[in-house]
Image 1 (cartoon, rainbow, N blue to C red):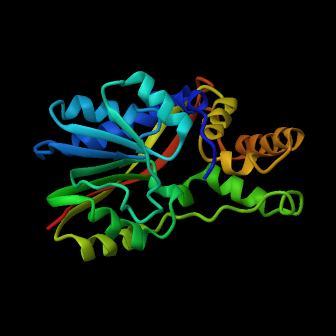
Image 2: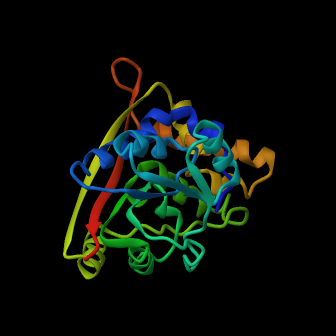
Length: 256
């Protein structure tokens, strides 16, 4: 897992938070007295849950000390814990009415095992609510993956395996663990002012595992290669902005 920089991440906090808002709004009518916010980051998704479920006990969980420090500073009344969902989950001794996760589990392997494991954290009739960026479908991730596998970079960067499954694979997993679930996809059309802004977005997330393998001079070179490819594959709109499409998968599953 990469080291996280809350300042870099927060440069596009409104856009990053909108999927959490949309997922929370889909939970209208669900009665949740206790919620685990898995992959809470700097607390932006936790704030969405506070606003949506003001009487619930909410715990934010993340495995980045930097993100947790930021979240605790912003929301001192909320409990935040360092937690790695790759583990056996025994360190969490309580059950929840909801496990909520916004743009987190794409960093975790083996979703066929992970999702059933997360269901064990729920009370009966509890809700698993998850949003996942569809990285395999995103042009920037495709660019990065292509560059990493070129002769220029293959000896300096270890490729990252994408953990995302297909929509159909998630459907089958959900049908195995729940009799009451829904799944949908939304493509967000972000307004980006420049190609540089797309680079800055990805420095906060998807580029981090690659840049951390490089020297400072190589970082600049690799980022420049990404920039060149961005200009080839994205067109500027009439107002000089860039239409930055970002597909995301959502699902909600109730525990029997």
